[in-house]
Length: 460
Ligand SMILES: Cc1cc2nc3c(=O)[nH]c(=O)nc-3n(C[C@H](O)[C@H](O)[C@H](O)COP(=O)(O)OP(=O)(O)OC[C@H]3O[C@@H](n4cnc5c(N)ncnc54)[C@H](O)[C@@H]3O)c2cc1C
Image (cartoon, rainbow, N blue to C red; front, side, top):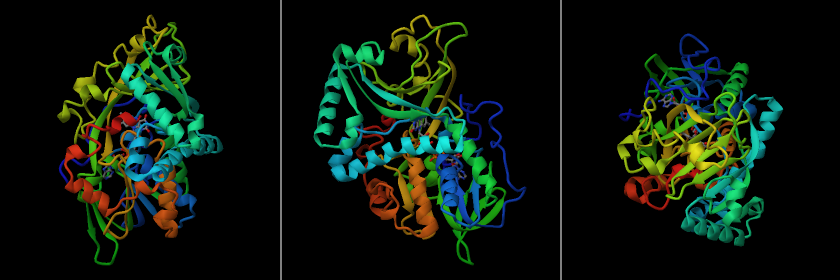
């Protein structure tokens, strides 16, 4: 297994993982690992849990075992910003340049479809996860960046993309008034959502376990995979081996540990987020929208307002990007990121009108590990040249508007042999030897992670 490609043993706790809601942090359906499973899912985050859910929803009668190196939802999903925000124009112009309007619009439309799909699912299932439909407000405080954003908005509208009708763009004083952000030079808003990701995944876990078809084994890392003499695969864990007919690699940032061909495609990179609360009795304006704020010096933060008046905010990657060892190819979510630890200290006071005397302070701060993709797209589908193995990984800081329908498509492929092209997943997400080779043969600086053109953390 590639060095460092297992989760760190003791991650710091997040706001989402509170005492009393962590019943699957140390859970095993059976005392011993089953000797055989039809399908083995590696990773019990959003991608793994949701793939299992959709396999069952597709009516599969096969046995499913899920392994997680730590607890359920202990990876990026339990450590993120809770922002379910499709990308309508941030990276889409780059995708248009690279792959054409149709392929790029397919990505935007797929992400947009996540908002109503999850709203419907949460309502139908009665999931208590603070799902909130909102407007996501993009804010630019730097004049030059504001002008560039306006040009992008006009260009995207000129393409005639119907989804752009949901976007409203504001310039000048109006931007500051609409957003409430001090010094805003431009703002834009469109439909998005926020939720409590950990509660959502815990609910999903209960649903899949209730099927009786799923065996969940936490604190059980998969450490190697070998072809088995009887066909299928033998997967090694510190608790013994398990035989599987099919394997789904849903371990995101850590995928190259078992699939070294992805070592240059999906890199574990750290990010930081925190929960900010106002002291009892103090008052601050309720933020009932979500935000992407860019400061005058172009540092980006993603932020959601919660109904209790508290805030979850993260980002600040421009602060730590120069200190590569603190975030790049780094899986240690037991420590924060030195270069950005203090950034959110008085963030609300200095950013929002009306918060100056709120006493708002960080109640919890944490880091998390994302799987950054060389070309910004996740790798989904069959692992090239490895029949019977599937991958769904590399979601950057942007899994919430991508994973649900991707796992639905992947489940169709696995349960009913549906070809990728008919799975409903955007074509740019398909894992392929060509994409693998591009990262393997290119320099790190040619990719989106370290390249100057785009930086996946800024997607949120
Ligand atoms: C600080 C931060 C903020 C973010 N904010 C947002 C946001 O606001 N909106 C958004 O859309 N996205 C956000 N993201 C990104 C988002 O959280 C991820 O894209 C998404 O959660 C990925 O889900 P996943 O299931 O693929 O990965 P994970 O949730 O990381 O799950 C992978 C699982 O695999 C397990 N695992 C790893 N290796 C092995 C192994 N060998 N054997 C067994 N198990 C293994 C891990 O323990 C883990 O539980 C953020 C991420 C971070 C870190």
